[in-house]
Image (cartoon, rainbow, N blue to C red):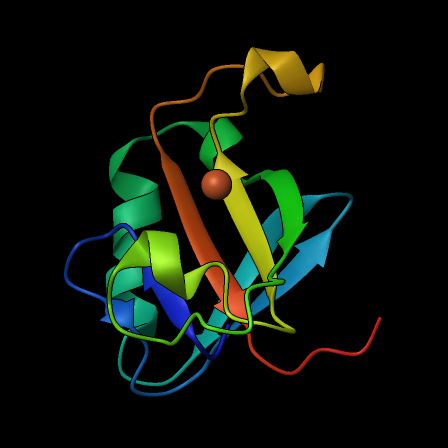
Length: 112
Ligand SMILES: [Fe+2]
């Protein structure tokens, strides 16, 4: 993640990247800069294994969206990929279902 990561509310726009290692759809490692410990601790406070699963992957397609600290705009920055972790809307018909919470973060210049 190098754009925004929210919640936890202490983060928002990232000052330095947070690198997540994903295996089988699940976060197994959190490394990186200033906000890394905050995010790792936030995930762990729920004591909920579902918080570590990818709930969705979305693409940003709004050419007018900027990284502002408002999550609903940050997640739409053109060309980004947004990852959601934790609770998954039931209409997605995924296998995660409800978790203790949900967090979103994006990568600003991914290659797909
Ligand atoms: Fe999300």
